[in-house]
Amino acid sequence: MSKIDWDSLGFDAYRTRTVVKSHFKDGAWSPVESTETFSFTLDPFAQVNHYAISCFEGLKAFTQKDGKVVIFRPEENARRMKRTADYLGMPCPSEEMFIKMCEDCIKGNLEFLPPYGHKASLYLRPLLFGVHPQMQLVPYPEAVFAVMCAPAGSYYGEHLRTFTAVIPGDFDRAAPHGSGSYKVGANYAATFRPYKMAHDQGYTELLFLNSGTREFVDEFGSSNFFGIKDNKYITPLSDSVLPSITNKSLQTVAEDLGMTVEKRPIPLDELDTFEEAGACGTAVVITPMARIDIKPVLGAEEVTRSFVFRPDNTVGPACNALYKRLTGIQFGEIEDTHGWCHKVDL
Image (cartoon, rainbow, N blue to C red):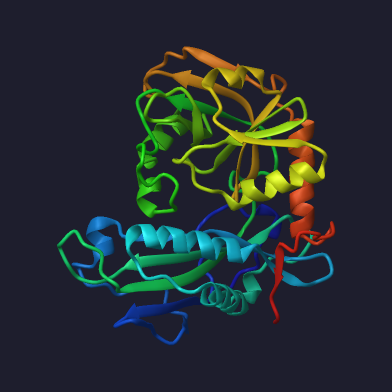
């Protein structure tokens, strides 16, 4: 293995040493296996190949200031995967099994765990997918659960700087009463094309409105939305929004910092009143927004409205404080008073 430049890590697939996996069949999970074979063998008729019967999670392991290795809130990811698996009609590992396999993945890939001091982490990607061969549109209790990992820095290649986003008038993220609040792979597949179009025009993010009426802010394609005004942390309340563990943590951190937290519908016009706005999620932590444009047709040139939060492209004081507080807890620089960091015994 060549020497890793811990300070230049982005957010990419990275060939590490081992993958940890188990197969659910005939009502039971197989013994957990750690393998250096980076491939899955699937029947051509496996459900995942035809009907996208899969879900995933994302969480991070950190080397803390005192040398301890911790996973940030893994029980929350285990519970969220269970909720998604139930929605898809899939078997799901227990919370204990989920966390143990995440620990095993870390232990099998310790040389890829960034040391303290580089603002980097080991990103864990638990994946659950249906493997039973069938063509009928019914769930079947056979699945593979696997945990893989990759060393990761910032999702956008740089820590805490402002970006621009666009609200596309001709694309929706999730249907009312649909799968938007679940972490199913198909939700992300639908954003690949509009993301490519947005990136080609210089935008970093896509912000979607509620699909039913297009009156309210829903979430970004990759993460949750939050806005800051009058010392308030405001984030959408919507049945179509994925319950982000980072957003949940930031709401608590905001209260620790003396802010008021409001989780409620956010009318589109209210974007004009925010002093700061951003995206938040495991991969990005916080991505502050400098500006959000509205384009009736994403591929066309016309911009009908712009919401400007940081005209000088600087990061606002609230985003700075929230980011430093949360990452300070993750890296062991600030006391973990909420018990979020799960210690890994190496």
